[in-house]
Image (cartoon, rainbow, N blue to C red; front, side, top):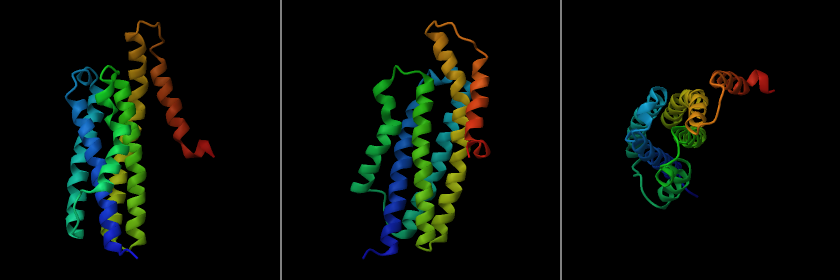
Amino acid sequence: MRDAKDILQQYVSDMVALDEHIHEAIERQIADDRLKQFPEAAKVVNTLHSTLDTHIAGLKGQLKTLGGEASGPVKEAVSAIAGVAAGLYDKVRHDPVSKMLRDDYTAFSLAAISYTMLHTTGLALRNQSIADMAQRYLKDITPIIIDISQVIPGLVVKDLEDNQVLVDRAVGEEAVRKTQAAWNTANTR
């Protein structure tokens, strides 16, 4: 039977790997000149970057406290999964900023469920420090996911305009209202 410390080391190490991989993709986006043309999108991506900086440092501190390190086959597997979510950017540089943010949304959704799992693991194994950290970090990223969903409609409208398609520019705001309403749990049950 594995001990609690070993399991916690693995879960925290996996989270470090995931966040580092997403961080690498975000750094490539920040360096992309296209992002600078969209201040709202750039603001969200910069928030993603600084949030990940904080999370990675905190996770590594927790891992050190547990006596572990962020390496090994589990890290490589998590990085491969995260690569599908966030690393696609390297393969599709021609994609518009809206698709960059779509990939960020996907990656941060993976991070959100991973923090939920880490929180639960911390609680189940009676490590309140890890449980609290995971919950804090989840609370950090959920508003960013919402921010991305609010920026995307305007970017999609701009993408369509760039493709010289006649569009109704006002639908961006309508799309934001309707998609945010879809997330309102009072309306979905």
